[in-house]
Amino acid sequence: MTAVPPTLAAASPHVMNTYGRLPIALSHGQGCRVWDINGKAYLDGLGGIAVNTLGHNHPQLVAALQDQVSKLIHCSNYYHIPLQEELASLLVERSGLSNAFFCSTGLEANEAAIKMARKYGHDKGIDNPQIVVYEKAFHGRSIATLSATGNEKIQKGFGPLVPGFIRVPINNMDALLQATAGNPNVVAVFFETIQGEGGIHSMQLDYLSQVRELCDQREWLLMIDEVQSGMGRTGKWFAHQWAGIQPDVMPLAKGLGSGVPVGAVIAGPKAAQIFQPGNHGSTFGGNPLAMRAGVETIRIMEQDRLLDNASTVGAHLRAALGRALGTTAGVKEIRGQGLMIGVELSKPCSVLTERAAEAGLLISVTADNVIRLVPPLIITPAEADEAVALLTPLVKAFLAES
Image 1 (cartoon, rainbow, N blue to C red):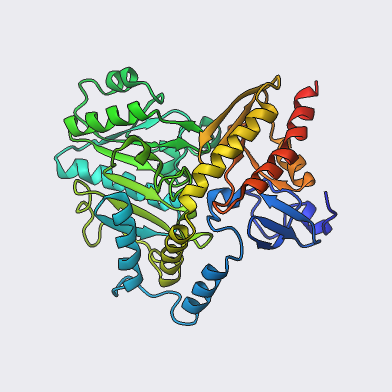
Image 2 (cartoon, rainbow, N blue to C red):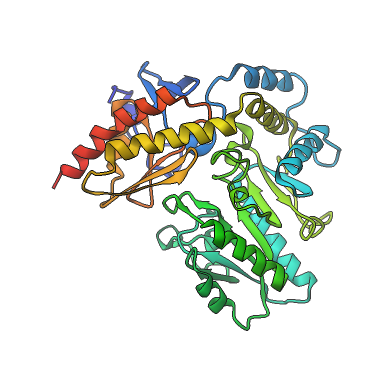
């Protein structure tokens, strides 16, 4: 790996030691490439963890943000913010839902969804509302979202967790029915269409339809976390749309602002009026700069047909990975949809994050043994092929190690 200043090789004495960092400091980017402070180039297969929808230094986004900075960066939600109305309308039109609340992160969006479900229950006279969540889920690291998350390793040390969650395995309707049988306190079912941190595991389309039907029958809220899988990453605006269903509550974030922090909760008629003034809020949520980023992201995505690109280049990338690694001993599965792809190996492989960076490719490893690729939605077939060419020898060499 390119040499870096000694201060980057160890944790900063003034920054909390909350991240396992690589000894890299990035300085700038262009398209699907970034450069570190020593001039070394990397192909970005991580996209800031599914955040940099438009890649880096997109000229139209940069110009729009510069324009907005010169006008108004932040103002209080005591006042109307026209860009909130504009972005809300764009998201409502593309989701088929009815109203939006804006915050700054996916964690905040998921926290808001949990609060909505609880208030929905209390408004119906349920004193102890309970939410169905899933094994291997990841919804955030606040106490409530951590409690909804299905990962004991990251929960350890933060108990007692928040009660009120019922956990079931994915794609198992019998398990869902059994876990909720005779329970009048259930108010919602909450899941990711594709589990990102959990290892790129997808909800089956027929299961999605069955859960939608069950929620309708029992008057539960269907809450779908599209923080990582939404905003065009799978080739539709939101991954659940492949099943032809609509949720009642949909948290968003990550790719919505192409790098500018912005989160949202989009709600349908059953949930849109749950929150009233004083029930919830966010100081930075819906600020003009973040809203301008969201508006411009959607405009550019449509202008450049990035949903189609996610589908076609994603299929190209999965096929190329299959040809290169599909028959390799130790490669258990290559899965995902669009530009949200996981390569599951037979053993923990976190070391590949650093080895890939040394080779000039940015990736991550999730669920201990799943290589995750979530590049910018502007990636080309040639860049996808380059990613496969860089990754393949690393995976084969790693699997050949004793």
